[in-house]
Length: 239
Image (tube, rainbow, N blue to C red; front, side, top):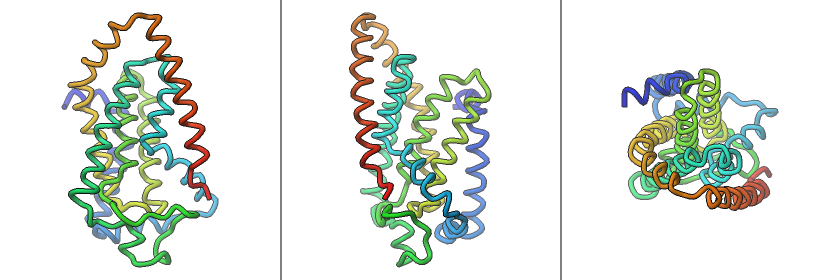
């Protein structure tokens, strides 16, 4: 684990700063009021860009987007990323619906919309902990950052993107800071185990696939991924 953290040090730099801020606000203001501190900082011109950015944390959309962008370049990386998204996502959903099922979202906790900043019809009420979008984003981008860990700038940018997408959950009134912090940690730690135990198996399996068959799979999956991306864009809650 120590080696994994060190290899991802550039990716973790912005994330650690974000986690420290979240932890400080949680300690200073408490689980619920820390949300009001962060959610109260909003701007009209930023509302819809944040609504668009939050969609990067959707597991279905992000998996399809990664297939579309990276399948031809690094099939193994994409498969590991999708496995990490699926595994950590299932754990997050289990926690939401079976363990912390009575943890409501800010709009329910604060009993009305006047205290909470939200955008358009993007209104959520139940299953707050942990944040699924924060989990998915951290999982997927950790995989990419680990594969390009010898670089410096790109992992930092991926870390910043993880922070921004995770922050949108608070900005849009969907999650408390503690939900986001837990989601990020789940995504990062879950990805460590995926890379350690499943990555060698996935690589061993795909290395046995003949080149022609692999190219056929890549083309087919890219077409499916493109359709998924287009469809999800049309059903995005922009209104």
